Image (cartoon, rainbow, N blue to C red; front, side, top):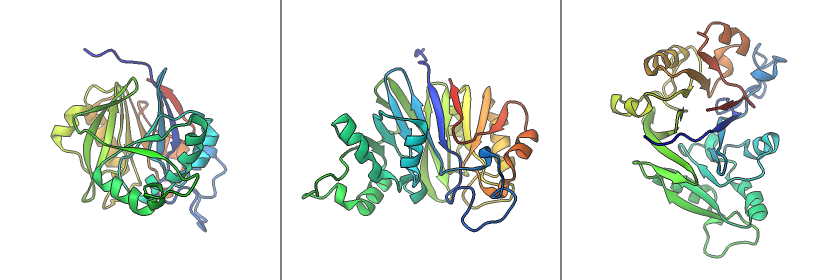
Length: 259
């Protein structure tokens, strides 16, 4: 049995694609003074003793790195190519400069195409001085390692779009999904900490609802489950948390856990 290395997980953002509060919205959640109701776009930082990675670099990437004081980053791993998960990619330039090396980037062919389209200058033959530098790696569906971290990809569907979740030791992260096959569920079972997207209470075409996320959490049976990718439509953080079982709770920006 593989030795489980200690992990520190930081929720950099727990919001949906527009964040919370939404521009121009006057609902009770968007007007809340509770900092746990203020959500940047979804992303997490995984830190072991020797390795530092981020899953997804959305539009708030720069702000998230500054807020969490992440001064070293070994790699970015992408779940999928939607803008709320890729739009901050340009800001890897700071790490290029500080670390004096290219950023290691792990993605599938769909995300690679998005990055090369949206950030064509990064991959141009003739590069403008100071543009980001990245080494692209294709995700190995059988698993891959970054430093002392081993990541096991989990195949999911975000409506009809194939996306990845990831298991790292006793921690599993799933965002932007509304379907997981029985085969892929087997990869998750036994995980101690599970993160799932739970967009809102009402049905959605491409995300788990709160009830669907609760049912999946109960099926997997992790010691603790956290919900992320949360919309203002779900409700106030405090109210929703009080309605959940003790081993299931809403994550919030800045939450740090040890696994």
